[in-house]
Image (cartoon, rainbow, N blue to C red):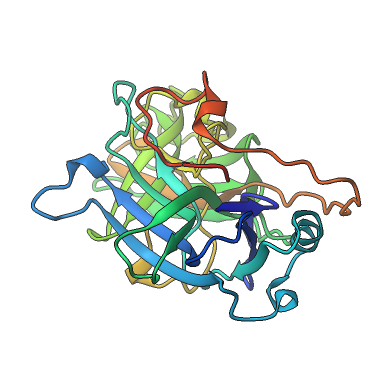
Length: 362
């Protein structure tokens, strides 16, 4: 069996998600049933680490379709123009079908391994996979002619910008008649990957304390399934060494640039899910409301933290980091070009330590 797909990235538009349109080809129309599954998997360890029957993965979602023998007319399984073109090109032994993502699933995201992790690392990731197989039934343990392919669920920035976020605080000190006032404002709420963040810091120090330093950092907070835990990783920092003496003021714009290129060696940084032979970037913010807590996977949020070295004075300003929505492209009526994904065709790209995530001709 073979599987044909028009793309590998499927966009979550908050109110809807692109349907996964696929065509299965069985060139010789062999006897036996053919099934295809769409699964969302949360990994939190290597598959070969399974002990006493405990797997380090959990299926957050699994949907199975019987494609052959077909259960509906061919026309009813066609939901994209690419599917229609494929059917015309591949002939009568091609069978269309589609999947729809449920609303409560996270997007593709993974935590970056450490520099010394090798092969199938201590992986923590949310992944999506299409798998086709031949079997007597969809629950059969013996499956033949299996092929599988990783896909991604992604989100793009919304069309509307929110109001620029701003946070301020007033701090009183013992033995000081007047307080310290600090205000932090970002120039906007939504940033695209690669954009510089401008943090406007306004400090009015009417106290009798001296501020020895101002530290501005860009941090990502990640929430992981099961433990419902959260942890913070700093992805950019400016240790300004700015001081504000008693009775003085400071108005300054601090610049931060969160990039994966500056964090390649940092284990645990959240990244957007990637395909094997492509690079990726820092994870985009998780912006979808209504995601069920029991299937969170990994949720990502960003904030700018301003810390004053004078007692416990710190402010956190949240912001959103995403990719811009790509321009809509008109679908061309050109001849289809097929790209085969097989490990033997990715020599020099896939290392010997990688696992067999993609098998067969897909």
